[in-house]
Image (cartoon, rainbow, N blue to C red):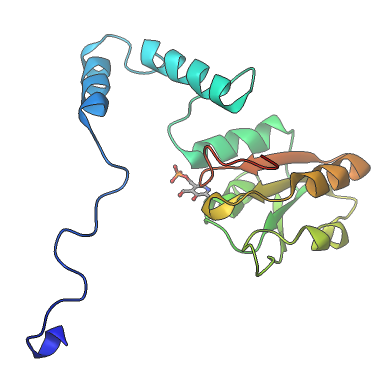
Length: 174
Ligand SMILES: Cc1ncc(COP(=O)(O)O)c(C=O)c1O
């Protein structure tokens, strides 16, 4: 063992920083800082266009963080005081705190232990008259079965917010 003077199991330098920052990143960040339009400048617009196209969407809006995007989504779905929003019991904290910040009530649904994502079979039992939306989180790059979620959402007239912070570039059904 290393503690007794033996070789280290994890050698120095094997753990790399993530995300990797390269010269392209440096170039664009510096250009942005030096340009007069730091926020919502041409780089932002270019990213939005490229991101939307990459996802097969018409629009994309850049935000300063995933948390901010979640806040905006809750408001955009018309959720307000006393509304219930279904959310997986296991996720990143802001998947649930974005609900509290808008005086809504998070209703936790347990996860499926094979995928670690929301157990879609348990969503329906959590729906009440106050339910307004479902926040689905695609954790660890693994997509939730959106056919099942969208079926339930349509049946009960609920909005669906997908938190894909950990799943940019992931695919469902190919
Ligand atoms: C699933 C998930 N949702 C939301 C967030 C929040 O993103 P940010 O840290 O950019 O606010 C994260 C961050 O890692 C996340 O993993």
